[in-house]
Image (cartoon, rainbow, N blue to C red):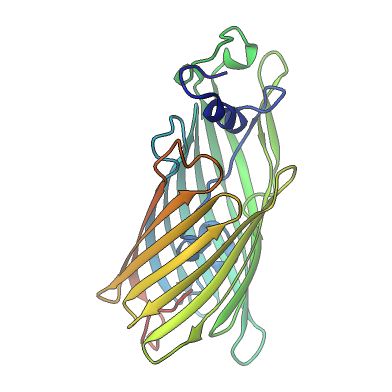
Length: 308
């Protein structure tokens, strides 16, 4: 057990770092502002905005809790021609003794399904570099063979996604990586276990007035052997400039979101998560910032920011 922190925190931290038999379950990053960072979860979203966009996201989870997750990501994606989307993402994720770097290329092809509806089918291909440095932790049993060998492993990534949408709604299903893997140390003990993540998402935009739009949205994540994660959110777009919203992650956090559209090309968003999982007494919440910039717009008819 990790020393010098309360037993309850140590228990949670050990769950994140190692399972009952010494295996480290590789955790996928989670996002509160998933509605502004959709490509990284669903390659089918690539290019559906009709513009080339770049975004940077930073997330610090459970601030004040040693070894808690910290994530940075960069995405550029957009449409080429009328039907093809291309993109690139880079992700850096730290949790405890582990660091995970992912680089993915994205391709999507759009198919009309009606007068105002389209289905975008996408895939992502890339590499995952996992490093584990056990010297960053303090353990009661320093002779445990699991903690004797640092790791550095490169693995392939392959994911697919579908994004079906109209002018005011969308539904999506995806997996960012179908390639499962396990890594063993010299004593044939499982050190890390990478499992596929499956996402299902949806949202609807309604005009409450000429100056207010309302979008309820949801995201679910399914991982074998773990409870289903469910996020629901409600966002308002005011005067096509200000986003205000709230979100709830089942049995985990309540969130507040705010965003500003500046000069029609720049968007900045911030989210704060308050823990409801029993860790609220041991951390100062989670912070997430996203910056988006429209590099150039291939959809000249767009007169206002699209809400998804």
